[in-house]
Image 1: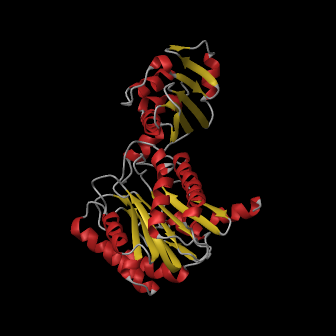
Image 2 (image 1 turned 120 degrees about the vertical axis):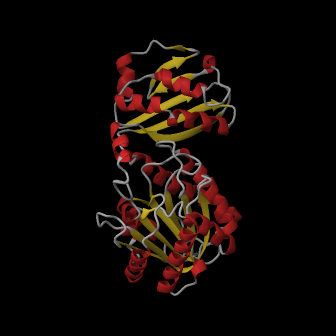
Image 3 (image 1 turned 90 degrees about the vertical axis):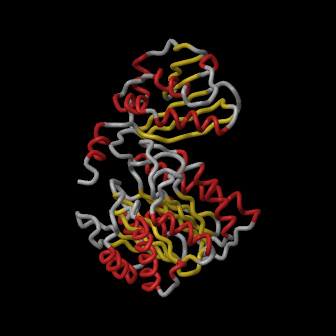
Length: 401
């Protein structure tokens, strides 16, 4: 596939795969009149799998989607998503609202309510404005288009500064998706919504297996601020429109392609982190097990002291070593080696004879690399984060106003 074709495919996002249509409309949930309701529909029954927030406080759409997938993971036809209101901490009334949202979508599309999944994002503790939601669904349904993925991606944004879409074609099938997220981002499901579609034919159990691998390598490897939301959801729909069946022998390639899509979307979230000025890749190697490498990398990525030092352009390597030390992993500074970019700043328990100007230059750009070798084994992991700026406080200090 040439570069121009790839670029076109990426702009489609959730409608890059055959048999999917989407729309994004403004129904008045957002005060500024921006797009705030997205509808994605499949022309065929779709196998579906989902991964959801680990927060014990779970929004009504999370509860609803889990219950629906437990009953029907083979014949999903649509996903409706609103932004501007999370429908979280709204009790039984919130569950009634999400069921009504699914039922209204089903009516508009001529399918059954248990063939519709729902996602919401926005302020916690507010009821959905159901009159506006119903009007939005009625407006969106006749506007569904194979090229509607871009509008749908814009409609799910909250504090995002730009839509996030990506797609890849592999042999006989395509996988594409969209996501939103800029704040309240932390591993163990990164705080965000993501919807991924594919025209491959795959059984729900295989699809779920592939999704969990992909999420663990992508959305569970990013952090912005350490807050895990009530609404985190990743859904993947497979409608089989390509005719390409994914059996056990094709699972490796399918999972790899799905992971590539998820990693790209996850990295877009970090690059658009609230107030972020730097995209930071943290690679921890030399661990005894991958789980330990992940834990150390996440601890460094989550450290406010590391993140503010990066924002200020201060190559304060001691904060990185200290974070590794309180990660809970049995690390030993005598075996550690640390790099900022290509500058080796720490080795065998002591700082190296590096040039301070070189280390400062290594973290001065918009793309920063931190590599820490624990010197204890062969396992490694990569985590992505961003810096922490004054603007993050400004954005979140006035979120509801």
